[in-house]
Length: 385
Image 1 (cartoon, rainbow, N blue to C red):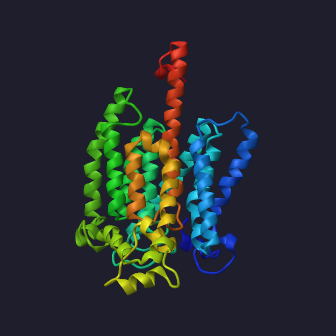
Image 2: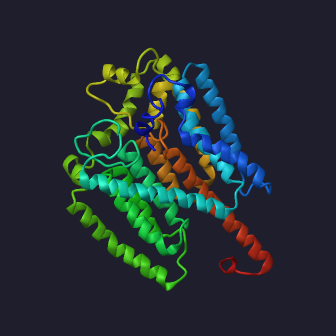
């Protein structure tokens, strides 16, 4: 649920109000889940969690440091988008695999429900729920604050779908469904990532094809993809891309914003821009409006380079196991960090990324466990339950 909707009920993303209201309601669920599973599942950790404990410790130090420097708003944001997802992964690490799979299915179901809302908004060309800002080309987002956020969460759900969270019978249909949802959001970056996930599932599927029906379904998926693209074109889903082009000012701003680092003096580089709003700083220093669509640059401007460096290190530590085993996940992580504010503002993308990375790690651990058991029993892994 996006910040504009939450702001109707609580001062979540607006100035003032109770400090506890600055946290997303879902953020309270992760510590609660950890407490519950700690009692109910005393069997211990199902996967290695050393990287999570190091990441949580470093994140706690970073948040405390920001709070001591008077960066309370950024500290609250980091709790929401970094610390809470890491605690969630810690809680999931005590659950059996099937319980984790059930929770991921719930996330996929919620994402699929939002595709229906996006389709309704696209057909009616108006937002059904409160949104952020104004755009010359309407782009649906459903329950999320921005179409990029909706598109990013769709390809996260698509990534989990492709890695066997759901049964193979509906996996391919869901992948195409989410790809259409991304196209309806009219967002270029998420559409490219969604296309990559779709292509990787055809070329090198994470869930091996074991039956002839799997090959037939994948062949049908290849045939349906161009049809879906043609339908999207005929319904003007790509009119914004056609009108603005692939490399317009919005796309260029992801990289030209890096030039603002050279405008900082020594104090601003190490401590962030003090005294007035970052947006005012950009308007004063630059010609024309410059959009911040890079999380690392955003954190540098707000709190300085050391904070951005620590943030990047925390990301690498928490997601290191998944990055070792999935190149697609590495691409997703880099795209979110460098072309969006997913890791620099209040939103649910980091939690979705954390779930994707955790499932990659969980799959690897389970596969290694099955191979070890097969070596002891002499039974092939595919024949084991």
